[in-house]
Length: 268
Image 1 (cartoon, rainbow, N blue to C red):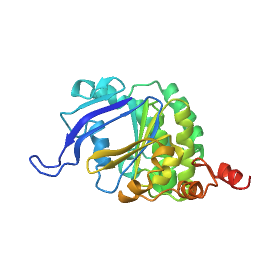
Image 2 (image 1 turned 120 degrees about the horizontal axis):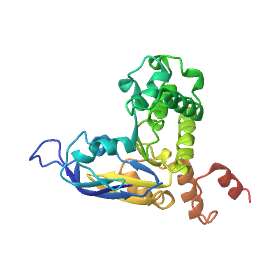
Image 3 (image 1 turned 90 degrees about the vertical axis):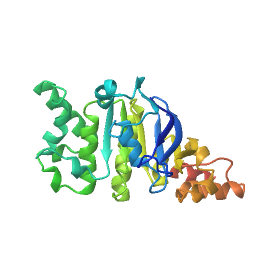
């Protein structure tokens, strides 16, 4: 679904410092990937590149379309984005109109627009907020509105840019649960974050460091690379850390990343 080959980018031309130095990776269709890296590793810059907001000469394909000016309109229709500060991109006075905005830009009929708005609001649990001013909502509710606005146009790819970083654990788990359901319906998800705990809801992990991919693979395998993750300034999720310790003492023979499964395994 996303293919990047030898991406090179520097903030200032002729600067010796590269944000990306021949960065390459692929994301398969239907994947749920958590892209992690320390602050300053270029995670948000990568989103701007994928959306065509930053021009690069490197080869990038999104859903079989080469990233270039001729394909940019179609590519942007394929991608939904949820940002860390959704309030900065709100354009309407009510949640209903905010969610409808993307469909209005696609010239959908009024009947189709309001059917889709009602459907997606029900899906993410914000039907009671449709008449509210989005700027007056809690941080968790704002993220849900932004998520609904991104999903209402049926994107093939959903990208989150540190979107969950300011939320409490209850709100975070709720939204990650919704993302998991969307992924099970076929949406390719790229969750960009500095919090490795969020990777427990996905399938794969990509670790960025020094402008390159340091690690990429299934989460169960990547989370075993404790020393490399810690050198990148990342803390292991509790269940991953506990699994490694119990595997060392022979209590477990594989990594367990589900709390109920962990409890059952320990009390066997």
